[in-house]
Image (cartoon, rainbow, N blue to C red; front, side):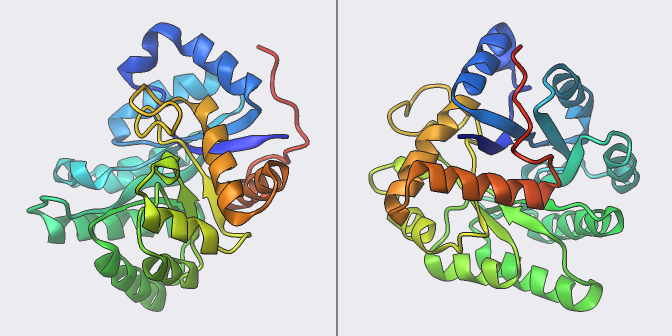
Length: 267
């Protein structure tokens, strides 16, 4: 059985001292591939170094909405160039809208749309962050789809209602469930996890954040995606093996990864 963690941040300082041990644990847990997200293009070199070190690690490049004010006149060209510079770049992002306490909503929308354009030009999927902005996000994507054509992608670490979830499924997007699904009071995430079409479902850790039960309150890491998979399988009344097979296939298709028949490296 193999799993794919579709959203990690293992370049953060909290992993510096024991990254090889973290890798050993994800391999032992059956995590065959990982998608490393990107907060700002300034991270590119550090993420690329990890992708070179760990063959199963693929990555994205983009600008997070909470860093939208860092957008410069050359940022779009920079992201485009970096995304085309390494074959292990499989997505643009993470990007999106975060309206929690935000004062720059219009600028976030501009930055997000600019990155959608890059993804479309390069035919790469997008990793979408959406917090307190589901309605605006859905409307923006519909407008972009109508004016410029659709883009493949995933709503990452999804926390919306089933109704909101359906908006994004209707737009052709995948939806990724994180460790939040294991939290006792995460009722709307659990409800969404039950109703996502089986061919649009992904799982992730978003590590080092949001460690699932029974690791809640600790540093999250890729090996813990197994706890996410176990809870989603329970909610959907399928076996863990079935859930793993389907989400692995979905991740392979969205990100253009090698078949899960490939072997995880021993070291």
